[in-house]
Image (cartoon, rainbow, N blue to C red; front, side):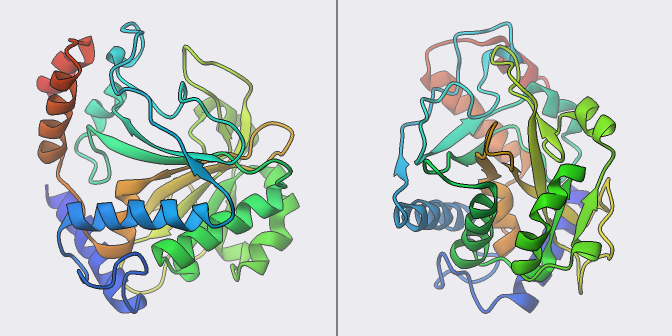
Length: 287
């Protein structure tokens, strides 16, 4: 709880010192009610991407048909019917996160805002849209952003610098073999079982929550004042989809964040509403 408290205070200080007010909801102010901030952010994202032609689709059930994988709970946006130009807000719960519950940014139930670029979108255009969404819809500050990726990401250097980012200070290029072994989105991502597929070259988008300006240059693993808020593919021949953590974006923009116990209670309610008993339920209850 102390780690969570420190992280939240850092986010509140960042929001108060950098932002003139939330782009997605000016009325609640910094560190208001999380549920209100979350609802406002979700509505803002859906409305913002509807502008260029994205359409929302229904999420997949939280409880899946495969009880052998991830305790029968939805791992990410895999399995949601998606086509170019579609977006979804998907509830997820990862049993691997139980061992990391002491981390301030880990929750038993969280939401991924996922979109698939419109047909014909290039890697450069995909990253420009990501940046515009984060700054114009969420209200985040470019100076507090950083990317972690692999050497191929150098092809987007001009695009990243065009966003107003300093490559040498805000981008960290990691060893590709290390990234392949980790498959954590900061270099490569691969669909988890049962949806294994090709390795997707990607970049992790990080946001600074500490007081003052960020540590420079960015490193990896990043210091505790950095929080990863999105993974996005940059190879148009493989996948350009973006996946963003809604709760983490609220934290970055406002300082509001739920506790592990609050989200655990909500997870149990969601599972009970499904009328099924996935093995992941017991694992989370015992946490």
